[in-house]
Length: 254
Image 1 (cartoon, rainbow, N blue to C red):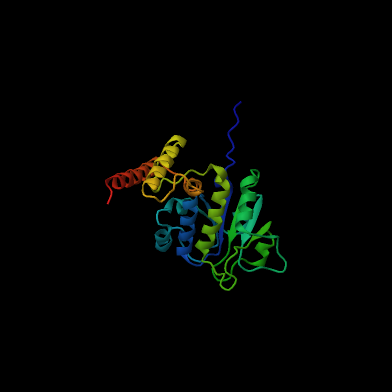
Image 2 (cartoon, helix red, strand yellow):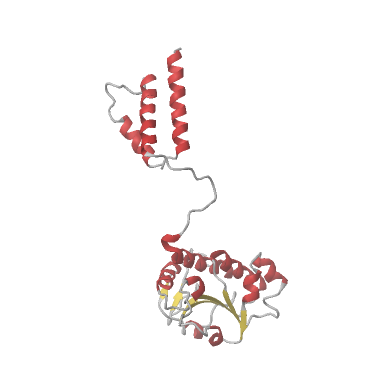
């Protein structure tokens, strides 16, 4: 018998829980933050307004993440929200005298990504009052975002974005793909780069910038400079074009 494949990806194991949220826009903002980072499991505990998931402000702030809103659930207690979870992390800027161990988003993200057996929830409180102590005390850890201590007040969706981002980075690990944004040329081969150095050296000698009989360390230093740039084929061709022009001008003379 073929057993069903278990998806151990953190993107499927992590739940975002919002407790007694006051503003529909913040729910939409959290949905957007989740979707941009690849997460989709959203649960609301007793939101403080009717039609929390269909409110016009929530839909507007979701900005294309309406599928997260339509798939979200509304429940009446934190116990219901945590059903199916075996690990809970409270998110709060306010530290308590008696609380679970305090950790930062990056540290907990690494722990959750590595623990394939963990079906975790990150819990965010009300915009004004935060999370009540009784919920925090039920959690395994308290996540404290290391913000400016003189002004550490993050908007609810901003806090969710920070946590979602760190979890995404931890989940992808070394598997992150290069961004398709911007020009990405082919890396120059060693032969191309060596040819460029030879061509550039000829040009520098032609304009008396480099003494061929007493070169000292100019060329090694130039090689060291260019080796830090990761030269691409087109960039090598540009530099050889400059060298070619220098040689042509030097040949004509004054």
